[in-house]
Image (cartoon, rainbow, N blue to C red):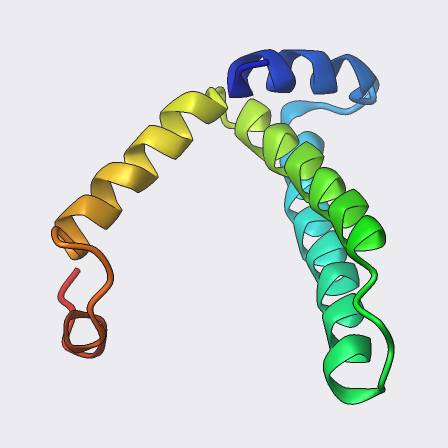
Length: 108
């Protein structure tokens, strides 16, 4: 499955009663909420002695993907284009791969 196929399939479960503004708001809020759930799993592993619940974390990553697709859809963007633009930005920032010096002294 391609990322754009995922976006199209995932958006079949989008609430049709929401207008574009509400889709955007729901998408961004959902990204924040699901990211918080993901970090909570990692926090429990790092700081509270829990085993890392990889299966639960994978489910949260899926929820994050859904909200990312929703947010992109609200902006009339295809995920493939969002991902490609991010790779181009990273290539410019780190042409030889990650470098801590370039990270510390990076220019936008």
